[in-house]
Image 1 (tube, rainbow, N blue to C red):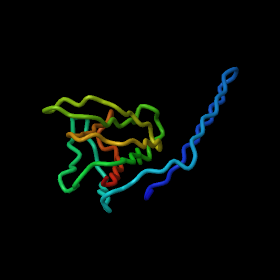
Image 2 (cartoon, rainbow, N blue to C red):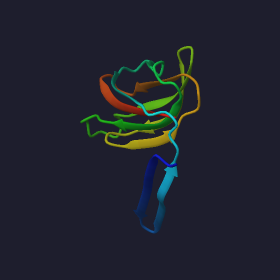
Image 3 (cartoon, one colour):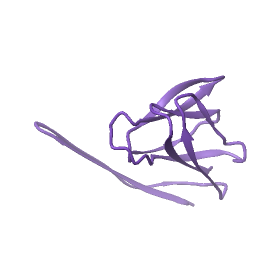
Length: 124
């Protein structure tokens, strides 16, 4: 039985280029009912994203909730080894990302200190 349903719509119009991508009514099974939610205030150094209380990692919803408007106010998210962050996602203010996480350690950092990142991870 599907417990998670989501849709994705992307419209690009940068003349002369235009593109529309749609994926509607995608479903996924969530075996464990749970969510981890945290808002991280990031510095320019790597900050761990704690997933220790999750029984299994599933979908992650990330959002740069910075009120700054500069496109340089980015936050990055990805796998971490020691203190080395291997960026997988970079978000400008207001941007979001939705992805399924593999088991492992994750972290984030900001291009400018003090930027907030909302992280919500559904258990799988």
